[in-house]
Length: 113
Image (cartoon, rainbow, N blue to C red; front, side, top):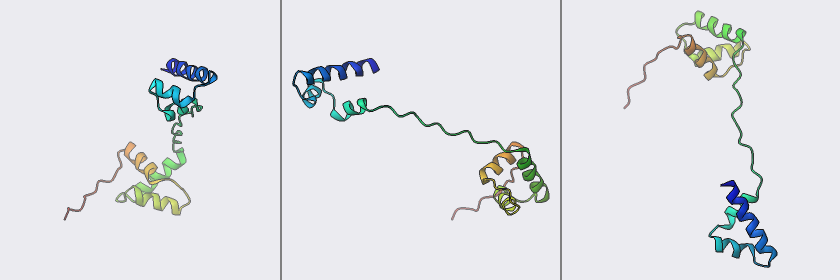
């Protein structure tokens, strides 16, 4: 596919050198102008998601100790308690750690109306 693109681009440039407009050359090939010009733009690198940093042993210990002292609390409340103590973690980090040690607190959903 890339080779075909390069061939088309070279063909259009040759035709332009001979005096034919780019639009006419592309119409003859059945290629839209926007497609042609997108081929000329340099490709941007695909951004990958950054690695999510793992919890430090101290953060894990803080989560586990808080859960030990408050076994009835769910991950959101535990995150709030830790934040008040100066340990700033996301709710999802607390949840994932509790899930990894099988300490996720089950809860009942309210019935739908």
